[in-house]
Length: 529
Image (cartoon, rainbow, N blue to C red; front, side, top):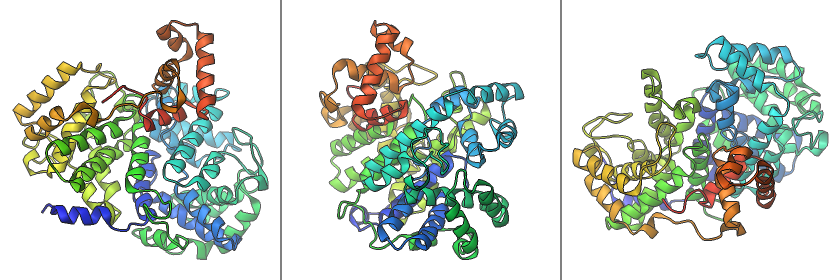
């Protein structure tokens, strides 16, 4: 039974721990990297327990807790490049494979890569992708994107003390990281602790604790701080206790250092900022979906206002819009970006993403009613949608509104298999879908009637960029090369390169992903939705 308006208001306004929100939403990064669910939660528990054995400084322990939880926040930052060049379209299998690899053992990497990357691709496709992956400069490009993604996330959720840790997350104890900008004690303690905990959890879950400890020993003094490895191994029975049961949720919440960080209080991030940050992680998976979540949220809120709904329902529509496609990260980019028709297998994979969205949101009690709305966004007609295949008339009203907003925004955007609809064609298609019963007619009418300004418009001259610089940001964000940018803007490739580097310097990023995240956050990609 749907909750009443007063119930929704109470849920949206009640005090909520940031750990509860980020912990639940961290399932998205687990899914994106092909990990088992709650991998990030278990890693956080191990990191916090290890940190407490290393230092009495509560701020260091706190930083280790949040850094371990957000360690994979940049998971989708290189997904476009991974899918296009280095994994035969299966970026998730590539990240899952690389997570286990110790690059001090090249044969281990090659063996796992040929076996595990893109298992549905031919051996020839995998070999060619691996050859490109081993090209000079690729590890550094990957590291720059991952670090930009993590830093942007930490700043967006008001964890600036974690941003520096994530900026260095690809570095190694011995200084042989892909960027080579820090080593040894110069690496933050939280980064070194999180590195040990990450390997310890990954291998323990997959192969058992004994093998995890052996793997830590193999990486001791290379990628990992030898003192921390020795301490972890010595204290392993106590550090591992209680995290490999049915769920690590309680252990994860218990591990947070006091005082707990509360959403929206004392400088803590609000629910909207957190969902927006995760929405950008999901949108970053494909160059065709950049900014989608924010645009849907704005259109849904405008539609709710046009329907005369109160502020609580408008807020719920906005939050559900931000969260409705989080499960997209569980599907490989090669499927989302396929230019032709999807195979039956691929179509069913796409249909599972709304179920994954629900899984992500259901873990935290405070996200339950956002989950109710987000889980039904892709239902259509008399049960023609997914994932529950129920009639749209049986779905929550907010879900019907967000579903119409989702179609409105998607039709106005380029996709791999089609160009964007014109404004007139988009309106005609929405009206047709409402008349056929595929979409809720009242929701469609409200969205089309809402004032355009209420649906969101890019502010003029954001971040002090010139019009030409905004053009460059847009083209880089969607993966255009310097020669392509030059051709589209009528300038030489060398001039295009100079513009790109100037924009990178001006915005303080080092990768396409970093630029795309800023473009999404500040609505640089389109004049309006």
